[in-house]
Figure 1 (cartoon, one colour):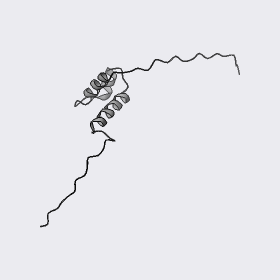
Figure 2 (spheres, rainbow, N blue to C red):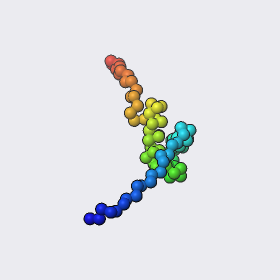
Figure 3 (cartoon, one colour):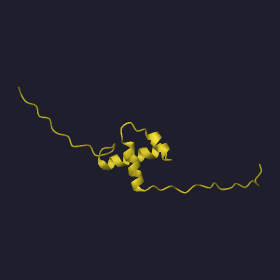
Figure 4 (spheres, rainbow, N blue to C red):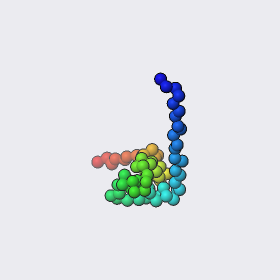
Length: 81
């Protein structure tokens, strides 16, 4: 085994940061009927999983997404005939 090999460190790109305004714009576009999330992500240079996460977070804040608090249950009252 040759131990004289020198490995070069892998250069990574810096993490991309997106403004809240940009995220909101993408999320609102994704909520329009007939919009393909994958096509929307591709058109904006994003990963579709990222768009799904932004959308899920947005809907949770509105109380409409999975993980949001369920609405309170109402009692059922039946009339006697």
